[in-house]
Image (cartoon, rainbow, N blue to C red; front, side, top):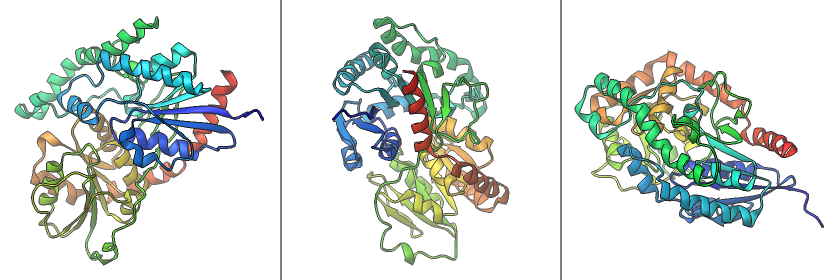
Length: 404
């Protein structure tokens, strides 16, 4: 019998967990009667996708440590050699699977390889990277920022950023020229989000993009949480004081989490923190409980406040539960995310280069006590609940494939 289903290929660039978790959640939800799904990912996250109900295919990504080190130092996230290797691997994969459409999460090389093969390309990104989002660029934690006042650091960064954006854009534009495709300009946001359809894993109520083209669509926040049970001591936690859930994710520095726990040690709160497999320097204070991994969605529902690294996955876990966010933000992606969280009045941002115990305690107490922020977080939860990312993706795919 002829299989009349549409062949859909997901490709995750496994530089961080979020870029695997989001497409995995979408791939899991697509109707197998309508779509024949394959999922390609670096084997480093194989244990997290082993139970996906689709074909799994290996494809290499640069080491996550190298990617995070580049982000922390303001270096290029992808150099020309890396993107050329990615394109070669993409083309081999596309020739093997022969998909009717390919969906990438942070796999920037697909902007080249999918076009070379004439396959519709849909890219999952966050709306704060959109050329139509608020153009503010908060200064990330870079080596020079530690020696300057926040105001001076921001002024200097604002002057340098247009040149830095062009420098970041050059490798992808160069690889596009290798394959006869036009360059996309020097505003990093344009080559970064280029696709036939750009899909925002965000709520428009949090990150609006007025004037965006019809090919830029909101899927809504994509929920994911590790399939682990609550710890046996969960029901023994004291309920007569606020509960704080702290998770800095796979990219969080253990020393930063340790500093946060120590800053909260003298407050009348209970802290449940996840280490994401990292060791933690020192001994945690008596009011803190540690886990390697936890069902973040369940913990957010019970928590009064969520402390995260400011990345979109942690932010949306908190806001989906209607809880305010304290974002300990370092690199640009986290800073941009928390810029919109603060602008919407649902949380506070603490840059890692300005982190100290006093700021952590003051921000924590404010978010626990400020009913205005807490109300706005509950309102945001209502807005988020209206999104159905898998259904929206299914509708978009049908539209794309009808016109392909």
